[in-house]
Image 1 (cartoon, rainbow, N blue to C red):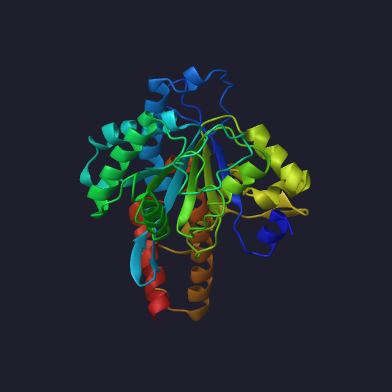
Image 2 (cartoon, rainbow, N blue to C red):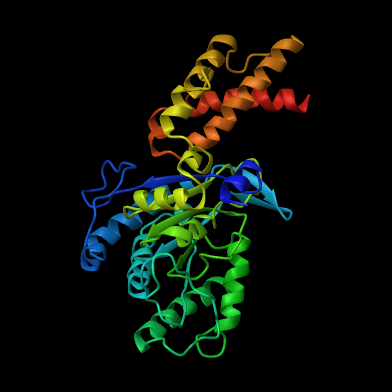
Length: 356
């Protein structure tokens, strides 16, 4: 029973994978494969980390769908949360303090809850190996790494009113961070190898990646994002800051087959926006449906005829589903066609008919 079967049976969601370069400035970041970088020194350069954190903060609401609301366990929720997987504890430390630095300048409505956890054991895993997640293993943590984790846990204690530490309360910290991540109380969980396998949080929809992954390790990590929750969550969102495109294709070929790519990965932006041909049939998508909406219905129109009500609800429902997918693409920001006000007017019509 492969991931292709699971997606086909609607037991899990497909993935959307972006490859983001932050080496050549951040003014016009495109979703494309980054060039190969050979040394960890270059990958850990402060300017690169600064650009990546800036990108995450600027795109966090978009990728985690913070404009969408849903109910979970009688709680009203806004969007989803995420994991940020990095290649080493030293890199996690640099990222953690860069997040703190940049968040200090963010307005109150843009503040995010960042937490981190990593294994006490060896961290020289292969790209397809993940942590056994033993929270009791304290034998090989260096003094520097322990001091960093103690500081991060102190921040966590202040954030949530707890009293954990690395000496007597780490297992409890592990359990608490596990629960709060599942309940979407943490926005970004910064990890090295922990929480990338066997951890299922339906509220999680995004994995940020700055580490090499391959084979089963890659699909295991990606699969932290694709647990089914509701109609708002339609795919797992993967944002790679390293060139993992070949590794992703190889993992799909190994654990499924190359022809299954379109089942595992959602289509590119252009297909959802402009349409495509499937089995000889032209598939009508966002831009065409918006054109049909504008031609057939006026914003805030009072629709009387039952058939027109039915046509409007069906068409606008299809547009909403597409808009939900397209909103995760950076390219969609300037191509929505309808203004926010026009969307609100049509949404009011949709709600009125639904209520009726």
